[in-house]
Length: 427
Image (tube, rainbow, N blue to C red):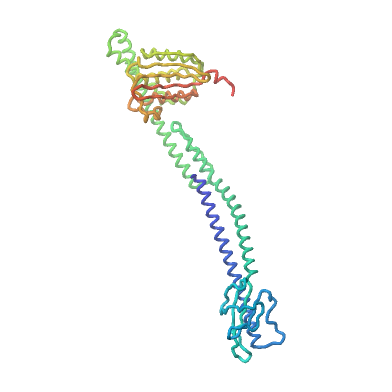
């Protein structure tokens, strides 16, 4: 569940709880105030009737203007209704105002002693005030509160979600930039928002990214220095070994030393490629014949076979593509230990060209396959830069490298590039 959804749900719950508490409190206060007014009215009617029975006044009305809502009874000491006004059934005896249901009506009843003018107790004066109208008012108020609460909740929720969206936009933008950070070329995140906790997160992220960039620059400088220090003597060693091998072609030791020097020289070139950031530079685009590239690399590794099913030119940088193919072949030769166990195959389809490097080596463990093209991941063999450089070059050419491997039976690395025709097609 996303932060936006969690906050939206929390806002909705808090809003509904707040409105519910406010509406419930308002309804209870109204009922309490209404009940107090009804009880006060009932007590006044009781006191008026009590005075009338003690001080007889000719023409005085026992029941006031609210006759329809008022029930008045004079009940003898024996419990018989002597003077009923509004109901024949005796009202219950209640010294304090009490709500009762009588004859299908809801009444608020109370009573006081019925004394004669001489002071003798004759019974009780009982009064009941009808609550039907009051209950109807309560129902109307409850409906009004529910309707207005729903409208207010909807409007407040829409406004709150809008404000929440606006408040979370800087965080969402920061998260998007963080997900898009390229570990190889990290760029600082831009933040436009208030100076709050999100601004602190943006500052911390940029501090970390700046540290990564500084570390990468230091690594590149170190790699460049190491590769440069290696390249010069390796070139010299490889040249001397090449001349010595030409003089002694059957000397296995000299041949192995020459091959090792050449491999180290290629590795130093890959390190220089990474250190100088050459994979980030623009390509020297031209029409490239991959079959010619394969033949050139095969001559560097005698024994590697080449099979071209169909030629198809591609657009690319011939030096970079040669480096790519060489790295794939070099990786296969290192895996097999025998160039004769490596083959290159070229095939073309309608929109893609597929250059496969097949070896009959030990294969690659399944756990290593997802990490083959990671920088400096070797899987226990090599420096871990050749395949990384190869994949990056393929990506520069809008292509990719796919791997299929089976333990004990070998591996196939396939370079897939768009054909020249597919790149020239409009759209």
